[in-house]
Amino acid sequence: MKAIVCKQLGGPETLSLEDVTLAPPGPNEVRVRIASAGINFPDILQIAGKYQFKATPPFTPGAEVAGTVTAIGAKVSNVIIGDRVAAIVPIGGYAEEVNANADGLLKLPADFDLSIAGGFALAYGTTIHALKQRGSLKPGETLLVLGAAGGVGLAAVQIGKLMGARVIAAASSAEKLALCREQGADEVIDYSKESLKEAVKKLTKGQGADVIYDPVGGDLAQDCFSAINWCGRYLVVGFAAGTIPEIAMNRLLLKGAAALGVFWGGFIVREPKVNAENFAELFAWIAEGKLKPYISKAYPLADAADAMRDMQARKVTGKIVLIP
Ligand SMILES: NC(=O)c1ccc[n+]([C@@H]2O[C@H](COP(=O)([O-])OP(=O)(O)OC[C@H]3O[C@@H](n4cnc5c(N)ncnc54)[C@H](OP(=O)(O)O)[C@@H]3O)[C@@H](O)[C@H]2O)c1
Image: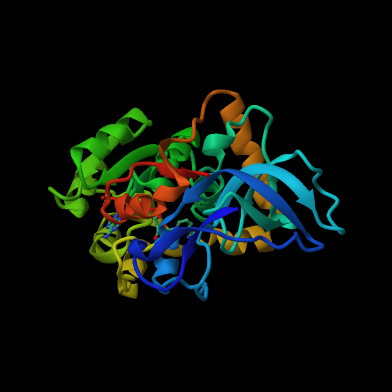
C-alpha cells in the first residue's frame, strides 16, 4: 500500500510517498481502509521530534482516520468487517490502510460522509470535552475562542453557540474572522490589529469572558488573564504559537479564576463512557442539522507535505484532510 513516510526528523520536506507493507492486525486490532485522514498540528511537531509522544523514523505520521473495517483481530467483538469507523492511532494515519486498536473505535452514522470524517473526531471530541467537562460552559456565559478559525478553534465557535454561549472569536485576519461569523460567532476580534485584552473588556462591559478556549498560547495567553471574568475558566488546549505560557498565580487569585488542562487523548482512555456520551450529542446535533463539521480542504495523500506547510503558514481554516 501507499503511505507517507518520515525517514528522518525535520520539516515537511522530509516526507515522501512510499510503498510499504502493513502487518496483519493484532488480536485486539482492526484494519481500516482509509477514506480520509485528518491533519493535525501535533503531526507537524511529531515529524520534527518535538511532540510529547515520540516516534522513531522511519514512520508514517497521522493520528486520525476514517474508513471501512476490512479485517479484524481474533479477540475483536465490537465491530465487524464493513463497519464505517473513525479511529485515533498513535501513528500511521497518512496511508491507504492502518491497523487501529478496536477499543477506541468510533462507529460512524450511516450517512456521515467518510471523505470528511477523518477530520472530525479529534477536533470536535476535544472541544466538546473542553467546554463541557473542563470549562462547565453554561448558557448565557461568554466564551472567548483564540485561534478561532483553526481546527479546534472553529469547532469551539460552533459548539459554544450550540451550548448557548455568547461567542467572541479571536483570530489573525479579517478573512478568518468572516468565517467565524459565518459559523456563528457573535463578536470578533482581530488580534493582529488590536489588543486582545482591551477588545474583550470592551465587548464585555469590563467584565471579561467567563470561559477562554486557548489553543494558541504564547503572548496572547497573558492577555487572557486580564480579560477573564470573576470565577472564569481558562482552558489550556494547545500552544500553536510555539511557546508554553507561564501564569503568574496572582492573576488567578484576583479573579477567583481557574486554569484547566484539556487532554483529550488522556480523557478518552480514562473516561470512555463520557466520551461516548459526548459523541452521541455531537451526532445528534449533526442529525438535527444544527452542526456541520467544517472541513475546508481535501489534499491527495501525495500532497501531505504541502498540507502541513499550509498549516505551518497559518493558511488553513477549519480542518483539512488527506484523501488516499
Ligand atoms: N489538548 C488537546 O487534547 C488537543 C487536541 C487537539 C489539538 N490540540 C492543540 O491545539 C492546537 C491547535 O491545533 P489545530 O489542529 O486546531 O491547529 P490549527 O488548525 O493550525 O489552528 C491553530 C491556530 O493557531 C493560530 N496560530 C498562532 N500562532 C501560530 C503559529 N505560529 N503557527 C500556527 N498557528 C498559529 C492560528 O490562528 P491565527 O492565525 O488566527 O492566530 C491557527 O489557526 C495545537 O497546539 C494542538 O496541539 C490539543
